[in-house]
Length: 146
Length: 146
Length: 76
Length: 76
Image (cartoon, rainbow over all chains, first blue to last red; front, top):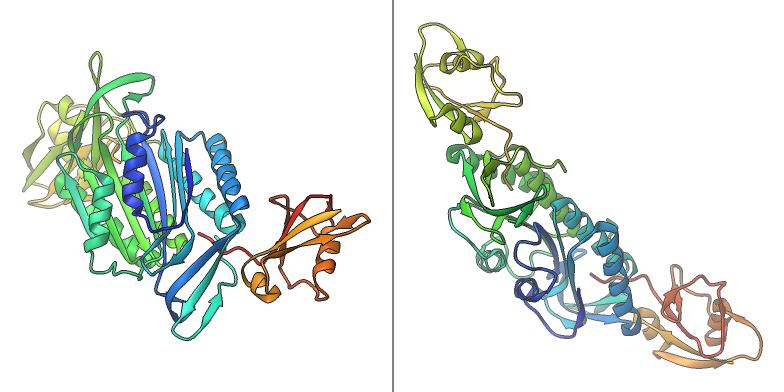
């Protein structure tokens, strides 16, 4: 299980490939399903062009929150392994923000766990987005529910 | 939109990365969500060690079926783009079999479409698996429902 | 009329061939096509297609059609 | 007793600081901590944590606790 907060840009597909190749639990032939979600910064939100974004967080809380939701998903869905990355700091359009990946024997568990982890992360994890528009800045008010 | 039947092994994460970088519809900043599912061959099924597998299909049907389910998902979920790869031929444990990826503005559409496409593919697309065990061979009887 | 018949997977192995051409002079359904290729009842859950689309066993066929019989699918 | 108070995101900007230390001689709840740092009512939907866990406004605090106030989260 790997949970990281990233202060700089990352390539989500390379991260999944590297983790899958290196993780002890993901030995060849042991898993049959992997569900991945990647959330990426758009250049447009609520009708406005967005130039960049600052992702602030409460570091002492976020790391524990992500570890806890991953641990709960491992147990309740019987997963084989999990990878979660979350970006913080100054972000530009097309930068990946969040990556959640779940490996399991069969598809149902991986799909359910990946989605559930994303919903918990979006509703509970202590991150905040401030958008820089063409004119001015604004804090994003709240996340869209599932 | 890219739909392909693959007669030889492929790297699913490289395929997603390459498609995402090259697809005209996936211009930087245009998509906020990508949901991916990868189904991989396990070395164990229904209590038996599986050495290899042959994936047979009805080529004139499968290509059209995958195109149709992708087209329907594009329209009904308002997706931005889709990538589907499906392996055929002789397959070994740890080889990726199926890859389904959906890009959208927000997470709900990508998640729903990715799952829906996988369920339709598994219940309708004309592929058949024959497992080679330590002793003998057997056709897989049916897929697990969702 | 001529119908091109195909068999897949375990059915292909049971039939010992991946297909054959059947001929008929009168109207014919998918069930009728099956009866022309074998004396056995179709296995439970056997599926069929006509011209690359899933169809029921009562579906009528026409000259030049491609009809396929196959077990439940197991892709993905 | 001493409580370490933190503010995040829009609240941090409104307060003009990312936190402060408050002192109290008697029992104190999260609501009481808020009243020690500002005269304003808390904004609607404001969330709070005590020692890195979400808590209600009625939760009691103890000497040495870290209490944080912040708006709805918008990660992912």
